[in-house]
Length: 390
Ligand code: CAA
Picture 1: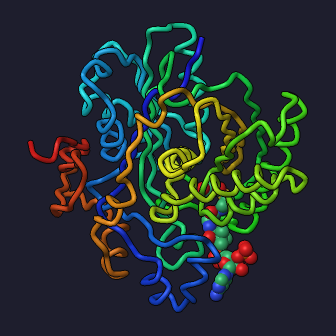
Picture 2: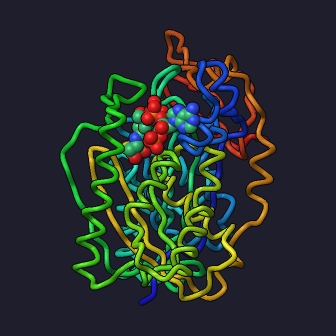
């Protein structure tokens, strides 16, 4: 049975911080960000636009009433969860009006877990061919002001509908994961921002890419010549470029090398304007590739490198299906230009705002701009979400 990504949607916050402004404020050379990290802007979310509102918004942009009536599983993959017990997927299920007889869960392993969610979805549809699974990768990447990771923050969600006979990408059976118990990036329960061994994390990312890709090629008797594009987890696009250069085989025909290079450039266009969105960034790379590449055709194979600190990596692949172009949007880069530009001072206030609860556990918030959904208030320690216009 053919199973894969039938639809893909994306949402990010309505506010943006320009890297040049950050560079000026931090006394850094702007080229360190634009050339050293390949980043131009970061999406900044206010307290009322969290992983749940962004996830619901990404999914709402692709779902029909028929989808909502037939989805039987909702998985939210995240490492910026809002609750240690209740799954973000339960809130999202409710906001989207999905039929009640569905399973809703949250998955975690740093930036990797959406890849595990995709595989779970694929196995579920294999067993229940009429099922539709909604996989949402949703994160707010927050390192803290004036930290080394500050320049790689971001916010956003990618939603994917996994079905049989998909309209975008068929997922292949061949996947290979690797696990290493390392401390490159982690966030203990008591901390709102992660602890990071930044340089070590980049080395681990690149080494897990190299070793997983070598083993993948051996096990599945494949090589770069079988692929039209390679998408990478994008903590910041420059690291993915290093990964791309690592796997590039210089003995390949120049034409194929150029095609792979061009497709790589297209896969990082959105991340350059958004920053890191942790679990979603690999799939944001896919969306950016599909919506901007001019050379992809049905039947093309795409490889994916997923990486989550801690660490788990995986390589998996998929095949573009006939008519995939019809599921995409051409206006995404233009829409990103419509975000409200924040000064560094405003960004520091908005991005790091924490709820101030009264004795009864109530909190209210300023009226920030969000997508169609917002966190409206906290009432007796309960997060109350709703549609913006209700
Ligand atoms: N002009 C042009 N380039 C410049 C420059 C200038 N004036 N000044 C510096 N640069 C370049 C540097 O040469 C360097 O490029 P190369 O790596 O190609 O040499 C680049 O800009 C970055 O500069 P630094 O090496 O000084 O590094 P930094 O202080 O910006 O820190 C980082 C980089 C450690 C990755 C930091 O951003 C960080 O801690 N990030 C968070 C951790 C992270 O993203 N890790 C990635 C792997 S882990 C993962 O993938 C999971 C996840 O999503 C977090």
